Image (cartoon, rainbow, N blue to C red; front, side, top):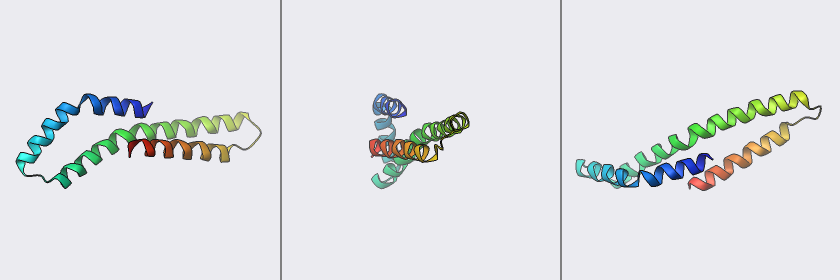
Length: 92
């Protein structure tokens, strides 16, 4: 879900962002500096929802473990690892 929101935001703001980067270029920023700015913006847009989802999943697994007699730590770690790898793969 977070990926689709991120993609939608990036796609809709493309024209505005290109104008912003054009203005920054006129101010003297290099392409490398502009790429760093863009990477920071994408990281913020990605990691805030990802962090909220990870915390939510952690609480959900804890509540599930309280109701289920079998240990779920392995499944929780596996699920969170898959979720993080999938999301990291989609932004790169």
